[in-house]
Length: 90
Image 1 (tube, one colour):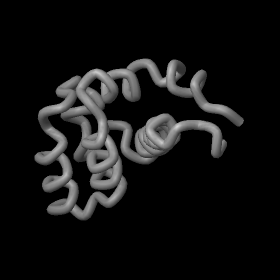
Image 2: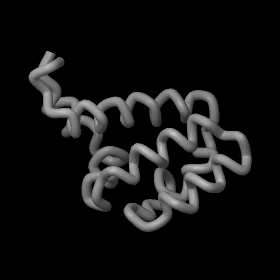
Image 3: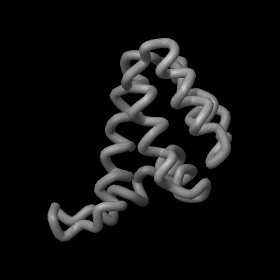
C-alpha cells in the first residue's frame, strides 16, 4: 500500500467510509447534498458544519476528507469508485 500515492489512499478510504456510512444511514445523512445530490466542490463547508451541529461524526469526517479533493475528483470518488480502486497498489 505504501507505493500508492497518499491522495489515492485517501480517495479509497473515502470510498470505504461512504459505503459503510450508507449501510447505517441509507439516506446519506449530513453529506447527502454531496453524495446524493451531486453538489461537488461547493457544499463541503455546509456539510461539515451541519454534521457537527447534528453530532454526525461520520458525516463530518467524510465531508472534511472530500474537501481535500476537487469537484471532479469528488465526483469520481462518489460515482466511479472502481476507478480509484484500480489505482491502489497492494
